[in-house]
Image (cartoon, rainbow, N blue to C red; front, side):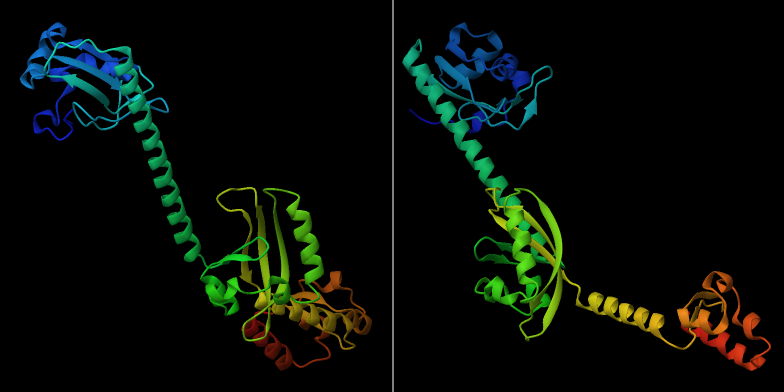
Length: 325
């Protein structure tokens, strides 16, 4: 038995010109078999030129697709109008010595081969898709600004951004104990949150906690944690986090300023760039007798015009314009 897959006379053969019925017949899942002398006249000449006297051809079906060609020609994926299948090709036996009538055993052997080729193609396609997906995923997370960590009982993966955020290389991060990295005050609530998350496959939560940087300092992280333990391709809790240390510090400064504003014994007001009053503290109301609602949107010069020189208000307005408040 000699393979004809590389026979130059059988490459790029047009179905329309040489065997129009093959396209529709094979795409419908029907075999083509018989003596060449009984084939349609337009098919006999091409087959006879190769010395073929008897032929058995079976389609290769894959997930409602007709694929492959190991005998007559290689084809590209095409859809036959009116058919769901995508026509790719076929596999066949031929006999150049006798007018063979193909037995059921021979047909089953070829059919088994066609199925095996189809399954092999499915596996190869699935593996190629998996590799492509993994490559896209890895490229995405390796260039992401946020840190990404995969955690089951230990750290299984740490993206390159972890080094920028926490100082540890990806390799160093794999050897770290997450519990020892977490601030003692934040560890109990974080563990409680994770314990609840473990019972909810696919659930996503967001939380904030402190983690020790490689330099020994504590960094505030905001993490979105996804339970993907049930996903075969992941099998872990996925932490997607960013450093919010500066944001937390700014919020703390704002809270402190607000506390000082409220507790100060001196009258304090906040004005916009146009010098209009936005807010006043309690001491302002106590000392001036004006409630915030009475002075909001007013100019300070209207309140103390008889107590302060004009230069005072001009300087005040210049400061407000320069500082924004």
